[in-house]
Length: 188
Ligand SMILES: [Zn+2]
Image (cartoon, rainbow, N blue to C red; front, side, top):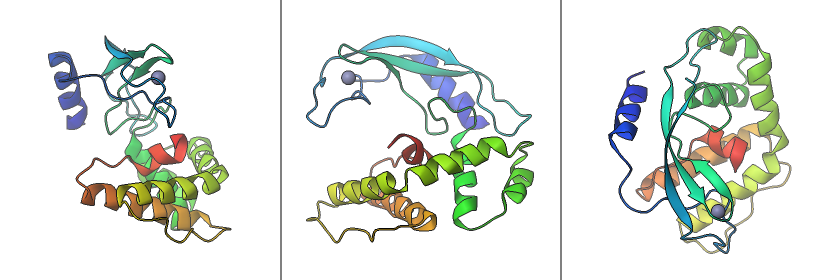
């Protein structure tokens, strides 16, 4: 994939401008703000596009938070601790939201084994409450809206998936880079 090559060229060309980003483990009070330093580049094994296709290794910048330890900066096509690129994880989660049989998803995306996408979908389902709340909270923050009506309780999978889609649109409207839905699904 061309964007992997472009990403790696950019990472190797030198450190990103400015201070390191906020720590992913910071508390809401910003307990560790300003305590991050750049810590050089690491190579991560290539992510998978299908069961058989592997991308070349991906270079990532690493930072050190004095309070919480090291963290890596991930490009928009990779998830921490996941072997597959984001597009595949997103497509698996989407297939469940639109009732596509899992076998059909696996055939379309070149996965031999149902167990990996089954795990992603189960993880999403296990977090529906958290994700619905996160989506609502971030939407209110982005749009600076006074607390709007809460989402109905007993939300289902497709409802939460659609809510995360609306959240991505709000990020774009505010000129921000939206996190992928699968990133939110697994790490929000
Ligand atoms: Zn920290």
